[in-house]
Length: 450
Ligand code: A3P
Image (cartoon, rainbow, N blue to C red; front, side, top):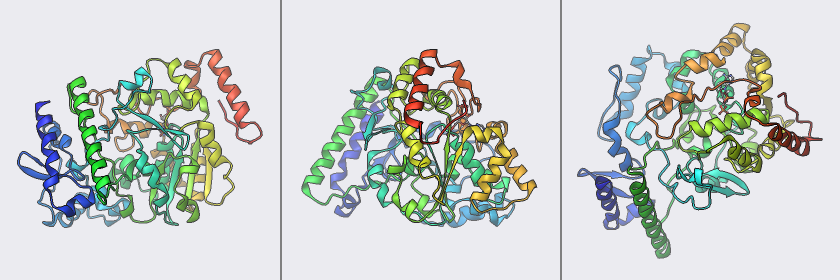
């Protein structure tokens, strides 16, 4: 804690920095006598560097900035990938080769204003807030990002996987990745699926403060002071410094066609996506299994609110008080546009019923007419058992058990089944959700297998 206070104080001496630095909103600070920009490397990350676990087969490119890093890293990448230039196309070099001190910050510093949330939520420090009537967790999606979504520039060649969380996003996105990469499984090895496919609303946060007027400077200083006290309060309460992984904000530099992920409801999705007619694959899942999967995900994901019981969680699920709001509003936003030529609406249960047919449908929608053999390769690689045992597709490898505070001993790749809801729902809860389905879906044509 002492160390934390020292470095925090050191950060506040930036008023003395050159005026042009202030204009970008960047704060320069010193750590062990070395200067850093907080928009690049956060001190919490530097404090945790001693915890970094190297592997004997790791390879590092290390340099002072501008010494030729990007050049050398690209040579190293090819050296380590059999000189196969095709593999460099799975992502920008900046994404394929993680920048370790800039990438291990998780946005969990600002989650300290939980006054209005249920007590069990407060335990994680996550702040839930509403944006346009939809709930979000500030540890996942920040309001500034949602406000800037209309600025998002889509490309007509873009492909988006969109869903309500836990509907089968990771499964569908892996199929889509292979569809867009010639069914070449080797290319999935260049990075974890969560890194290969940027999650747009969680990834586009940029420090965009402008110190354009004295009022804004004062406001910013006030904000910083508040943050400092919140952090101090957190440290005193928890006895530890909050730390995390900074979101990638690099999708702009990805080569086309980009494959991107979003959980935003239709009305909050960047309008440029529809304007450019970029392809969207929307995956939906029966709301009962969705609820159960999301419940377990709250336990798995350290940044999400924690619930003391299924019953308490279920109340919030029914009230739409979970990240991304009411499932049926989310689903209907896309279902009602399913006939648009750039939208494919698929269901988890149909993917389960006939996996290969779903793979074929996805490939065809994306414009690829593959051989049976290639379709089999994609199907095999994206089966539940393959994805579970593959560290590049199982998100567990990003949040290792026992090393991630707040994470329960549960896998992201949990059951991957239809019907697990029967192990959770009481008769009353089942009846209540049936009624919601009837009320919200009747007449829309949207139905599910349970
Ligand atoms: P369960 O929690 O029911 O097991 P998302 O990717 O949208 O977060 O969804 C996660 C859910 O999809 C989890 O459901 C996970 O197990 C399941 N899933 C992931 N990959 C799958 C696959 N290849 N086949 C079937 N289900 C899969």
